[in-house]
Image (tube, rainbow, N blue to C red; front, side):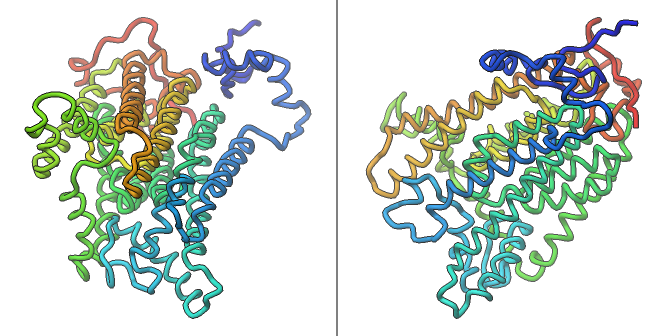
Length: 500
């Protein structure tokens, strides 16, 4: 009896091979002999029960470790803290982790929030103190110990472990597509920004939250997402897609459990610092409320254009917003809110229920697009989400190239500000910012297209529905949705019940 196989999937119908299934990788593979052949596929599954050591999972994990090791080398010129002659900018190795060890008073033994206001959400502040105070206690009175360097290296070790754990979560969520995780493991953005700040703390917790949701543990998922949101705010946005998809599938109880436990986790983590040291705890919210337009954002690009058109003697609209920060905040939040409503409408109107990762990526991307702050390391927020949402190499690499261009231009901007001598014309930095913004928008458009045309979704070529969906995976749509949903085309496959 003959069987018809899907391109890119092995004979067992489970494992994806990118050189077959991904058009970009298939084209590039021609340089080294073409896509993986049938004989190579058989070798990947040796007969007789023999196990090969270098499996796809182990290769991807090793690649992640290699990328993080190279990141540590790239940051090594800054590790001693003796930033003479602007080495932190000329060698592109600046990191908040080292700078804030001193700025936050950890080198003096100050306890975050109790002795010093902290500009980050509480779990990040606790994390800084948990690593920084023992370093200070060890190095206090011993001049042979460079406290800042020890603090950075300890953070690099823990954050690197969280990055590897995130790769492991992606592998767990994509057992049939292990090479998808290589997008994260080999990302230039990870190489350049992994320890610029503490973002990997929130990313690791959020990744485990998504894994718990996928494994039908909504309470655990809520706690982990709440903890992630107590480290950086954005993981709380993932609760919105969970709620909308649960409404579509009439699985609202699980979503409410996740949301309730997330809120409880956020409150419990924040409560000690908020009650005991309210002014120091409020520093994060105060900065976000009063902060003007930051470098590289949509609003910054607009300010540049203000100076190129109209009457230079009058404030352009974007420059006016930079002066009237309250209005800027309102417009930024309103645009993000409208984008979220659009994502919710898309989730209800799509011919098939979108995958959780697709909506999660769109929501977080919308936040960055309309935010007045888009720091260099925020690219890490999108990395695991885009890998889960759209694991295709072509557009991903275009985005990563744009991020590398922005990274270099940003350090040129920093060096120019430090020396009062521009390294690049301002238009170069604005162009790099525009390219970064444009590639993220393009990724959003491609994800939306695949939501509207699910037969183009690479993940659904290997899974019957949504491997990240948990209780939503394989669930039928609610009957009331018929009047909302966009009709499906005949070529679009229908969801099948999940198998355990």
